[in-house]
Image 1 (cartoon, rainbow, N blue to C red):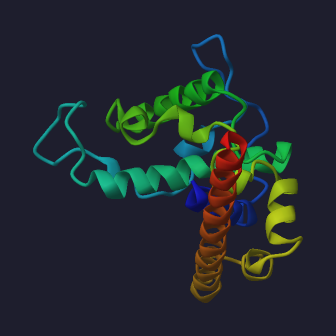
Image 2 (cartoon, rainbow, N blue to C red):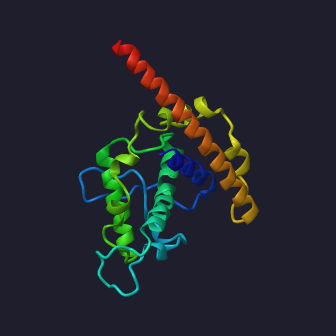
Image 3 (spheres, one colour):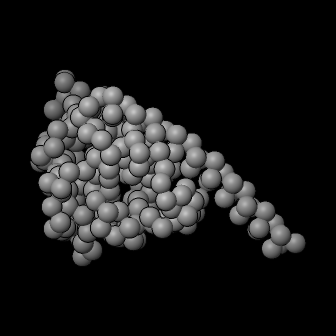
Length: 203
């Protein structure tokens, strides 16, 4: 989850105004997803990572490289959450029903691209995109982020340039990895403090 938050922040810096429209997509469920996945159909991304083996036409056949596919899908899904972060200041979705609705909408776009019909459920657990104080040092909002990491991080200075430039992109990725290490250290300290607090409470 620490890495996903870092990916979301990097994606936020690289979003162009035209990447996403503001209108949310709707799920067949009673709960609506607050983000729009239409961009999945229009931006270039390596869909081949998630296609079936060339010898199979069965939509339930596993993809050739599931690790690469799921990592690619995480980045693509992260675009929507980066937009959600920009408009709400929350890194993740409000509850399990909303997360499930969003994954259903996301899968519907993958279906249009003729990708396997179960990719979203294969790669993701809806719980992982729900706001929680139990992960990533309890960073849930932009305010939490700034309180833990400061008002400005390496991402602010390294990811605002044109990321189509390979050098600028590499610098941004390097900054993301450094911030990721900071988050891991914060999370370890936070979990230790929580554990100590629990023991003291039980004593």
